[in-house]
Length: 585
Ligand code: OXD
Ligand code: MN
Image (tube, rainbow, N blue to C red; front, top):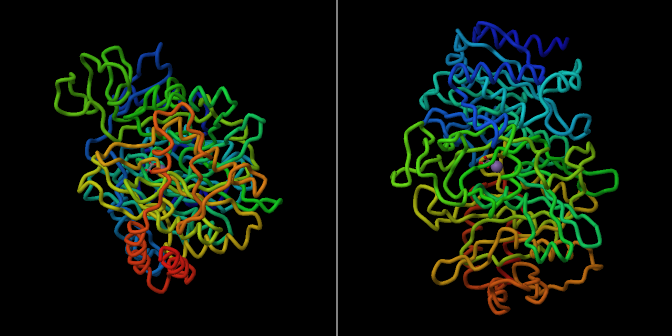
């Protein structure tokens, strides 16, 4: 028995007063029992057992359907350690306020103790967490998303090195909802929400917010990045990590299926992760990465056999769907699933729905939770304790005009600058004005567990610590023409851009040259294979063009954004900005 763990569980039980405490072993029988209980209680609904075997629908409280950034706090003792992009509360205040909400909150409920491992079991890059929760839905999701149960407990042994996460649904009121992180003590206190990003504490809370602090302290990186492998016709696989803000197609890129013409040439893309990467220096001086997660918690709407066939073939069994619609024959359904909409369905709130209904059938942030091991493109090294060596890091966002299809940074420090300036323009899918630029450095804006200025310092330090750092690129699939239409076909065709990227990573041994521009190296149009695309060479040239006047405006905006970090801004970033301005003339 782990005395530290037992004492912590006892103290949580003393505060929350559950009727019983259940230690989860992660077994099949335990899962079946929990599922049966939830089906009995009406919180899970079995789906069509022929078409979606062992899969279930959960409808959440309609006020609890997404991450709540305004209720998310980073609580180090000094506010400057949270920084201007995070909400801060003093740790003692946060604990006092939440303790009052936790007091007796599990009366009449079961407290589940969920030990889990982030990363492959036995990996030097993995870490153990324990989540205490009163939600069986959270337990079932954690079992898919992490290596959960006895194996994690065995790996922990007697050590006190584990992330402590306390979660309760509370009364699900947004007025009494808090997601608090205590980086100094590696603790998470979450109450009032059952939603994935707020309640599955291994994911955003531990694997990004707490782990980013651990990475800073221990010289490694916890990043909001997908991981993929691209295999050449010669059978050589290069590994790429890529950071995009939410709603930029990260899961689609991670599971990319090359179009037939590219497959015929011998190109293949492998999936390692779709959301989070943990990376550290390997014995060979390269940067090695693991996916700390074991499943995908993906956005359902827009997922179809056309946009992401690998996802469709992953979640067709052993999966949990949250807030999707359900057809009359018990199949999950959402807008953008392809084909004709069903003549009748039940919407995400359990109401009768027809194509004439004015509301959407599925919630726009409805989700599937599904085991990564079921993905047809999953790479054999997905579970490898050593992880994979990274050749390229990609940053991206939605930019209608500014960023070209792809460019390469001059070196690591310039790459850090490019990441620090990352931004995405809001779309009609978000509330508020369309086309507003939101800065989202390294796609970590809502996920960095400390001051973003110190985080950039850490990136710069990692460049000195790791002898062979990946090359850094920026991609933009979202340039539009004068009618606001996307120019680049995107989806599977993005493999053409990945090809240029991995070729550039061959360090002088590659076949592609590039043009030097003020913002970085850009491909010559001839080096992007456009064979068979519905766009001509001139359009490709347009996609790769850099408009100096637009970039002068961009540089000013980046400078203003950087200034928010005051004394925490590493001197290297204004230096990079000045150099960019000089190159722009
Ligand atoms: C996610 C997100 O759910 O980034 O992965 O919001
Ligand atoms: Mn994410």
